[in-house]
Amino acid sequence: MTYFELEGKVALITGASSGIGAHFAKTLAKQGCIVAIAARRVERLAALAEEIANDGGRAILAPMDVTQRDGIEKALDDIEAQVGPVEILVNNAGMAGRFPFLTAPEDETDQVVAVNLTAVWDVAQLVSQRLVAAKKSGSIINISSITGLRAVGGAASYAMTKAAVAHMTRLQALELSRYGIRVNAIAPGYFMTELTEDFLSTSAGEALRNRVPMKRIGNLEELDGLLLLLSSDRSSFMTGTVVPVDGGHLLSSL
Image (cartoon, rainbow, N blue to C red):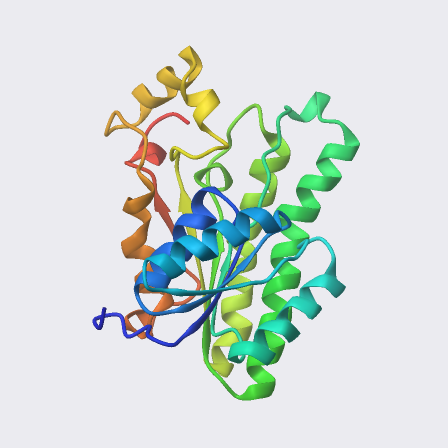
């Protein structure tokens, strides 16, 4: 509980109603963070907050649609009123794109860009502005993907936005360093979540698994060490990095 010295830190996790976001919220709460859990599905957030409380942690609900900037502002106002400004942001909310470039529908592409890119920009910007105004340091952790680091077929809009998040991370880090705000990104490979379990149970999913040098899919707990490192001052000289966690997948064919 003490090595990462996160006790009492206020952490906002977007996309916390399931998958990586829900797992990260529980991980940070176990380290003593006050976690503000954000998503649109309020009933899921309430269940997660209860689970965290039963495990001895503290969670507050921050319902928001990350594509609505006014809603982000209101949620940040509510968080500050309850526990103070956000010091750790896990910019996790995202959605999958299901089509290759030639056939991707405009409405889905617009939505993927809005959730995976514009919202990541907006949440980080609004959190950063408040940290600067309060003269507080902080850590922003954007969630990219290995599909944003190498060209991959079949999910063009998703991969495009995750590549943009990787470079956005570097630009944010460059500009925010002078204010004591660090910005890094985690680029996961394939992990078992609600979004991936159907695909990973198919023959195509099995073929993908076999292309991973470790010959398996990641467990969410295998992201915890990096999450805690980037959240804490143990990585105080680390900013602008995009770290893959993929079982060596980038070393082989995606």
